[in-house]
Length: 368
Ligand SMILES: [Zn+2]
Ligand SMILES: [Zn+2]
Image (tube, rainbow, N blue to C red):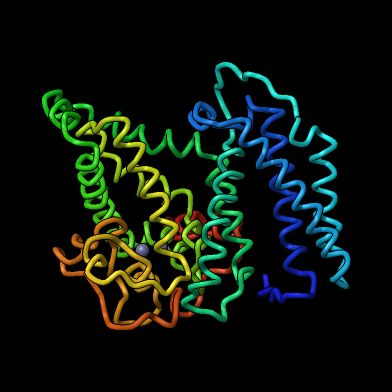
C-alpha cells in the first residue's frame, strides 16, 4: 500500500476517523451480540459494561459526524460512504443499546473484543503523541506497511486464546519438574513491585537468549525477519510479528515465570506493563530518557535494533531491561538516532499473507 497523506481541510482525516470508528463500533456491537464466540473471558470479567456502552455510543456519534464532515470536504466519496455504512449497520444491530447475554462456559473464542479495545486505546494514546513528538515528522500515519501491520495486529489479537495456550503449555509440559513449592511461596511473599521487576528480568534473560538465537539461526530468522522488515517504525509496527515468532519467544520467556510462580497480581501487572512497553519501544517518538535508558528498554535502543545500518546489526536484543545487553556486550547506544530501518535489500514484501506463509515455504524448500 502506498502512503496516504492526510491534510487538514481535505476531508481525508475525517474520512479515516469515520471508517475507523465506524468499523470498530460495528465490531464492538458484534462482540455484544455474540459474546460466546467473540469475547475473551479474562477481559469480560473486568469489563465496566456501562462505560463501554458509553464509549460505543460516543464512537458511533463521532463516526457519523466525521462521515458528514468528510462528505462536505472531500471529493472522494469512498471513505465517508464506508464510515457511514459501518455506523448505520452498527446502529441497525442495536448500537450502544445492543442486547447481550451471559455466554456461560466458553470452549473456543476469538479475541475480537481484545482487538477493538486494544486498537482504540493504543490509537487514542499514540496517534496524538506521535504527532506531537514525532522522531520522523515526515512519516505518515497511513505509512507504507500500515495495513499489513494492522492485519498482523488483528490476527494476533483474534487468536489470543491459541497464542496464550501455546505460550503456557510448553513450560507446563516440559518444566513441571522445575517447580519448587518453597521458592514459589518465598517469591509470592515479596512485595508486588519486586516480583514484577524479577519477572521482567528473568523473562528478558530468556527472551534475550532466544532473540539472539533468532538472529543467528537461519530457521528462526525466517520467522523473526518479518518483524525486522518494517522500513518505518511507529506504535503499530511492533505488531508485525510472525505467529511462530510470537509463540516461540513468549513460550521461552514464560519458562522462568512458570518455574518461579509469581503471584497472579504480579503477573497481571507484568503483562500490562510489558505490553505497553512493546508498543512504546517501536513508537515514532523522539523521547530520550537519560540514564533511565540503561535501566528500561526505550524507543531509542529498540529503534537501533531495527536499523539497517551495519554498525548496529545484531545489537540491543533486550526488550525490558537493557542491562542484559550491557552484560553480554551487545548494547549499542550511540549519540543520535538511526536513519534507516528494515533489512538490507528490503527482501520481504508488504503483504500479510506472504509474510505469514513465506517462512514455511523457505523452510520446506531448504529441507528438500
Ligand atoms: Zn530482532
Ligand atoms: Zn521490534
